[in-house]
Image (cartoon, rainbow, N blue to C red):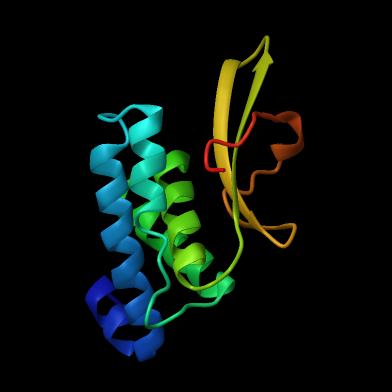
Amino acid sequence: MNRLAKYVRLPAEMRYALRVALRWLVFYRMRVHRVTLDQLQTLVSGHTLPHRHPLTPAQIGWAVSVTARLTGSTCFPQALTTYTLLMQSGYTAALLIGVRKTPEDGFRAHAWVTHDGQIINGNLPDLNTYKPLPSILE
């Protein structure tokens, strides 16, 4: 079954979740490499006002994962999108960036988002090997 047919068969709320996630993912993907940290903080905080159609954390995580596969987005735009959608839907969220250095991989960084202690987006099998940095969105 092609992607359009799968999309059309989804419930309306899931189609809505995909559209909103895709919008934010593309938005952040286009801007993340062109702004300073201060500008990024302002950009994200300006888009976390309550949304008229709140989504659940599970819907947000699913929609961001699906749209990230379609767009080839990396972890940071995914985390920004997840954080924005959680905040818009009235949830608390933490955007975390962690780093690690290993002889095999060298220096690596990864971004993920949690809500109530649960990882909503960005979970990795070896996530516990990343040392979280201070939050950039406080």
